Image (cartoon, rainbow, N blue to C red; front, side, top):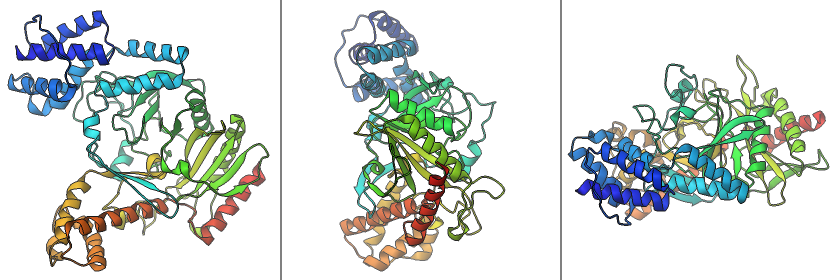
Length: 501
């Protein structure tokens, strides 16, 4: 039978690539036969490609036999792979064995490769993302048009920051996602595997992001469903993480709406290989606060204080003082207010160990205040940039890797066609559901480049606009602007920090 051959091939793959044991293989095989309502036979297995030659035919068979509805295809595929992926405890034991017998790098390599081979990280989908690098005055910027995850409105993110005890799991980061079957709000997570870690004496877990925005994109998440909070304990956890995993960086989104990430209701950090653009930038200015520590301002688009020292407690102490002083810092001359009816100043911190084996914290200063002119945030992308990026600028983008919405792929193609015409009907364009948001962009490019362009020229002009927009977005997030007035104010703040040490 067709399905029996597919099952045997999948079991062969699981034993060969996922490390599924002999007894577990028999158990998984019988579970698959039951799932597909097929009588077992002794089929010989072949070594074939997982996605195209096993999973896609299995899902098509299930739809044809009315085992599932077409809209259940993705969750069903995850269910299939969950059956043949080694159990959570086996994965944890293997991770710990590698960490003891080799090192933490070997252990994370195992978990990351398993996440790919189990199809938890869907590389075929991720490879469809459009990626490029653009140069800018303060360093290169990475840009990705993300086709694997939908765009979120900042106001929706703020609503979701208030957790609901009625929902199960309470959020996409809760431990209860392990093996979850998937519903309209939460995807199936049969193939999710994480390992327990201890950070600052607390129990956390380490897993990988299914979206892999950069190399070995991992997530450390609290075992408790508690809100994001930036304080001295957060700094201590981050530094503890890089002590255990020195080959990774780890950072936290800010803990306030607008400048925070997309999930503020569950404390978590994001890390991975040290490949984000900000890490390559030198210090623009150094301060001699402490003899045994390097303290300076990164030559970057937003406002970043860099601290490095051999002693992590030295780094922690300086970072704590920066946070306390920043939380209460106001400078009306440049529009920074720390409090109105609520606190506004917070930090996006990133920990790493540099090539000199020093502990490092990069502290990106953030402020989430709004006013009538900037209802989405004074340090949020201005509304004329929302056609490119409307979501809040979290940890990853603040470090120079932009994740742009997948809708842009279609909208760019439509704009290319538009610029090949000899004229544009702007009234009709304003009514177009896909292009109306790009009205100002179209007008600017038409004014600069003209119309009747060939497709390559039109495409280059559009991408040049997007590149400039991303640089402007990063500049929007700078609380101290990269000009004479802004740098003078930054110096005033650093003097306050120095006086407090």
